[in-house]
Length: 560
Image 1 (tube, rainbow, N blue to C red):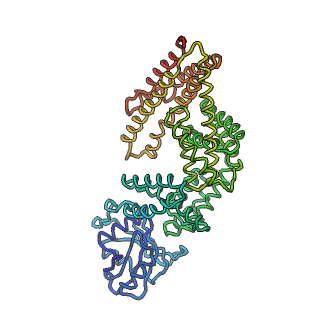
Image 2 (cartoon, rainbow, N blue to C red; image 1 turned 90 degrees about the horizontal axis):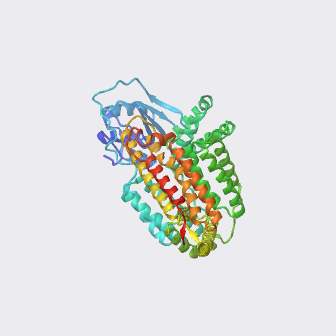
Image 3 (tube, rainbow, N blue to C red; image 1 turned 180 degrees about the vertical axis):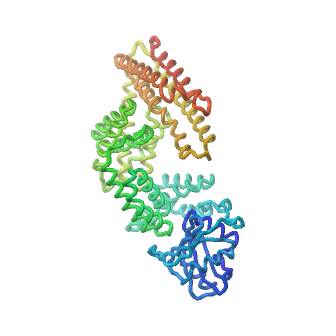
């Protein structure tokens, strides 16, 4: 029997797998039903199976293409068809104790043959539930592909070896940990970056390859957009959506991509005509993190400063609970960022290499100090490295210049602060208040994680859609509480002028009073003992820490 010809338990496993994704098949009819050649495979192309069926089957004609299964029906999308295939294949499956309806389509999706009847449940028919099917990723294949990348990473331009090596090492770690999805995503990034390098070296653009997983993700995303439309608008897109899904099931990625793009364009038009909808607090928090880095990477310092002020206004609107206004503010800022002219340079790669050789040690040293700039510097350093991997040296250069300006400003501020400190007669060290609140922030996040883990453990497997992602977003409720005071304490600790210190102390005390009010309301009023899952100490720890911080701020000055 040919290696691609399947029967018995192996056939049942592949039929179960065909319920998840299209599989290649080939069929060569024989004189007797039990002697028909029927082959299926997870990875091999359909035309290869067709050649094998012609070589090893009894008949002179073969059919081949992609097979999908839904319930008790198998659908064959054929590149080549043989007459009567539906009835013959149905009889062959019965010899394997499988009763299924068969529908046969040509390459354009038109029905050319079928054998469909009412099929009662058969207690003697056993189809695997999928437990014996191997995982969707192939560890050996991932390792082989990663090994192919190794010499290419080593031969990459000198300024790219470090970020590419880190991506290589991270991918190897994911494979070792059994995270196939994460390893696949990282490996695709690495392969794409290496392809761009090779194309640049050859003076020709890399040939784009269709990515089935990416196309599937786009299809799922546009399906979610259709569902979110008003019912009458969603109904208009039901038929095109089904057609796109059918294309994907048949393995026709170009048609799937084209159909998805058309549906997405219609959604764009319908959504643009719809009244604006406010984002939720969690979505706005995510947008804020991304937008802050985008503003910082702008080449024009004046524009960056102006947009950062507008961005701060949006953050204030979030804290005030005006989500509609915050959404509109972020929309305006994002539009201006997108329209901002990019800094261009014919020598961007060389300028980046020269800048980064002297700048990276300074950035790394500042991050290790774990000061108020550490988290911002770390995020922007990562953004610059990602831009380099994508060979967007102009973007990396812009981020690098902003990093350099931040470090220069910080250095000047330290010199001024040290000089002013020498001249102060009375002084208070506010670092203890800042450290107390920073430690409290970490403790509160740990308490939220404990609660999230308990919720996921209690409800996972139940009929509660999206519980895992919702539980994991609990920590986002802390951001407006912890970040506001942390920023104010940083400014207080850095102040040197007595009048400025007094003003910043008043600001910190006002923020503490406001936070104490917030902690007595909403989710924080119930979270410690009445959340229904685990006893935690979020409200209690936060209130206690606020009292301690206030006491530090208000204590009597001592002689320096």
